Length: 110
Image (tube, rainbow, N blue to C red):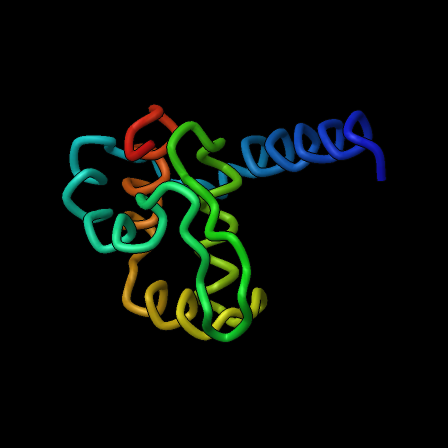
């Protein structure tokens, strides 16, 4: 899939979630405190995780809030597989996820 098709698919996903009202309203200030544990991996420049596989850990600051919310909910439900992230997301409420997503979408945590 080329970059244009990927971007178009991402925008369609954002529109679908927004239209369905599936997302909670996030509070970036609350997300700052709730995201402190995230910085242990996602806040380190060029960090590579060695469990379960070696891969570069993405930086979250500036990501789209809808993408972050969906990703965390998918980790929480087990639809997206990553042992560490599933464990981290398991205890998060929908509001926690919305707050964390709002914090990172605001460009924080770079």
